[in-house]
Amino acid sequence: MNSTHSLQIDPAANSRVLSVMKQKNLQKISVPFRIRFRCTIQKWIDWICFPLLAPLIIFILKYKRKNRIKDLKKVRMLFKRIAGESNIPTLICANHLTKVDSIFIHYAFASLPYYWRHFRLFSWNIPAKENFWTSPLDRLVTYLGKCIPIVRTGTPEHHKEVLDTLRYLLARGELCTVFPEGGRSPNGRVDVQNVRYGVGTILNGLPDYRVLCVYMRAENQKEMTDMPPKGDTLYFDFKVITPQSMQTGRRAERDISRTIIGKIKEMEDLYFEKHKP
Amino acid sequence: MEEKVIFEKVLEILKPYVREAEDLKTATKETDILNDLKVNSSRLVDIILAIEDEFDIEVSDDEADEVQTIGDAVSLITGKI
Image (cartoon, rainbow over all chains, first blue to last red; front, side, top):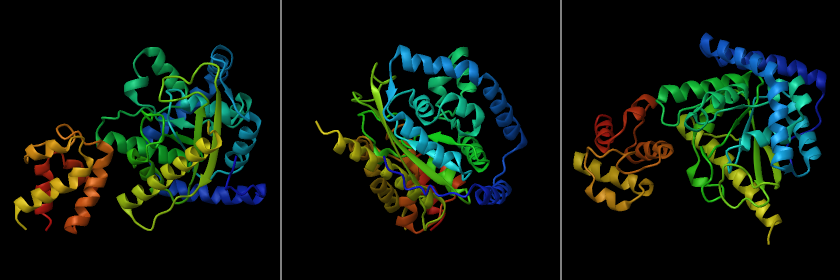
């Protein structure tokens, strides 16, 4: 597993820099009070309920479905160094093959006690409301899982509000996970042509940021499914990049999005190179 | 530039993004880009950027949001060149 991230961080200096950076970021990123209030309340409720809900979900994945993460300790150690020791706005961008990818990302990146102590690292997600807002139970679990549902066919105003909210959360040092393809890859491979530029829109408004590109895949995953195959071990790879563009506006957003999806595709190619039959 | 020429150029821009190229043969100004031509909504940005490049104009986010039909695109371009 590779990471382009520097691991030499002086905690004291880092803390001072982060404090200044956080203020700088917050001055530039503002959302209406109702959104700030809603996010704060949701985060507190989620944190309180976390010890009840999270172990149950992990129990199901680990013991009922018997899914495991390859090199779990190594993955968690790297994540801790990358995300845990710095508050730089970090967006997690992953490939998307199953409906529970974001849960597996949480499971792979840190232990439950670690999340409980550093709840900002339990990333926010933006599931499609059409899929995850169907029953009261779904709504509850989605709400308690630090999710901000998005209506894919919603108005530009709605999309803007969701993206602004994510940008605001990132600027506050919260982690957010998005799937640049916008949905699951139908043929099981990263679709570079189908990248959504929303990911670029989120980052383009931030004074400073980095992207944690994630490639994950169950060993017997052939195409998109609801869940990874039972009993499968999931491969994880991630790389930190800071995609930039010389362009402005929509063109910059497109450049940034394409760089991210290109990196994820590169990681997929590496996976298949390593796992040639 | 004549409206008909603009219309033809818009069709040319849309070509790589439509699901069935045949649909463009029967397209009119009323043809809805997303619903009738089955263009993926996330590709609308590419279309707007291609229009900007082709006609050397700038389109704001609000203007881009208003474009639903081929006629909307043609009117937007006509108003800017």
